[in-house]
Length: 143
Length: 143
Length: 143
Length: 143
Image (spheres, chains in turn purple, red, orange, brown):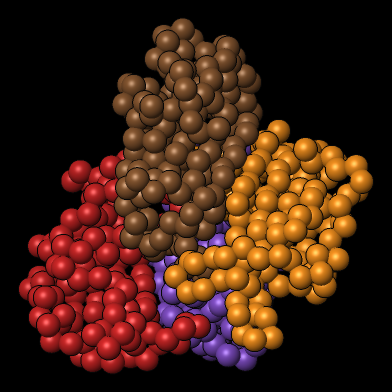
């Protein structure tokens, strides 16, 4: 059962000459769904600790399986579920649907990091007040 | 050993506010490398049979593991190798490098299809004259 | 006075290494606002005549003036106004705001066309039932 | 006469469902041409002064006129010319061609700025050693 559903209109610039949504854009849509899921939990994907240190969630692995094309102007639902909460990592699962029709499913593994300028990331433990917000789904269907 | 290497300059519009290449763009870079690899073999990703039927290679699964960030203006090498040639599918592996430094690796599985207007795809056997151009790498290091 | 306002969340993939929305994305946002404005009028940007001919609105000129940066996660309003309704062309104006703060303004001129496969466009007169839906703004502030 | 020509392969992800290059991507291509032109002059679009201050060239206005579509896999030439060198601004002109066929032309006005974190830009005079590298074209044909 998804913890959250994000609804997204497919835009003209999301499509390609094959007449369908370009596959790379599904990864952008998963990220948008992730950020709205974070917002729904009162969290931010880019934040700062009380001491001013920037923290974030760089992606370490992302995969997507494409079942059926999505088209210009489709209204798509992206169901988000929690696949795994690790000590330093969070893996979310995504199911893309147009109504009841499943279009794709994917997973993105992210790692909680202190972020310094110039793209320097150091993985650190997820603070309990953040980790506790994520509950693994008992029967995840996004695999 | 890669069958082909594609070299790509990272562009300003490939980056994001984290100061690095946005992860979804690695999938676009894999596709660019695939198309140049096809070109090197005398093949096209979008083609027509003698009877005029359009044929192509829709993506069915893509994954990427991100090891180290890529930055604006980097000159990146993308090594392409053949992971598996199936009856109707082709899986290519990709290794991203900046010089000797490995940045990411991924795989994209595509299926050979007859393509009709409106994003209608029907998978069909890869013709032998195409399939024979792809030789699986004995020791693929992209897994 | 705008005829329509489109509200858009700035996404992570809309930004670049300068920490702001990449300028090319303002053109995508103008197009999204245009399509939602068309929808609000009961029109489609890609449509078919009763005889099956595809019709559309290819862009012939687009410009944008950037006043102040937009940032990740901003909620942006795009005001749409009608600059000019020609015999075959339609020019819409756009004003980007974050609250009362003006961020950018632009114009896109499109031409009504019969569209054939392979990107072949033939400009034709806008049918009166479509042209009549657009009313030029008496005092357009997007110039 | 162009000062510089940048050659660019049109990629699958540059196209849209109309079967042509999406218009917003012409602005990305102009930026790529600009950066390669800067490189040819020994300049960088993002640089630092001897005292460490970051400097750059935020865009203040961009326009493009679209004459004829560009298609997937086209090899496109982008001619760059210098329209105007101001005290703090630089306006470059761009002509898109597929062989001798003109596809589009545009202009981008940029302003030389000190850049602080968080997208804070302060316009400053272009140092003479940079300004002197740009020579206005006597008969600019990009207008």
